[in-house]
Length: 181
Image: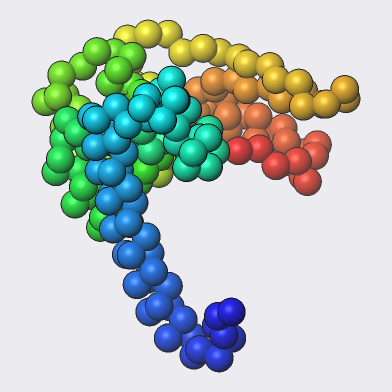
């Protein structure tokens, strides 16, 4: 058991930064390992129909975690220089996965992927999603309903920044405790 409460504030912050660096290094190593597992088709030799199924069932990743890692791995395969950006925090696993999903859907070149990766450095997932949406010639899907329970349904809609500002004003006026986002 870690005795983190014994550390000074400065020690805790330094150790946290060091662990984050270690985590990013390990993440890139995992991505390269997944690439080699895919290249050798080792998942098939173990009875799995796909790398995704192997990552979920054998490696015990959640479906979302497996998807993001496989997507980022495939982007890393095309753009090995992404490794340094991931290691130093200029990009994240999630933003790289989004770029790869976009690149696959839009069938863009490796050069275009490179330019997009450069443009998402130090961007949040939301900022990355907005950038990718602005680049896409395809119309954005406007709404999505998902039942959460008998009484609750999740509604996802795409809004312009003006529409979002109006919705937030209404929310603040009538339901200050309602949280959007």
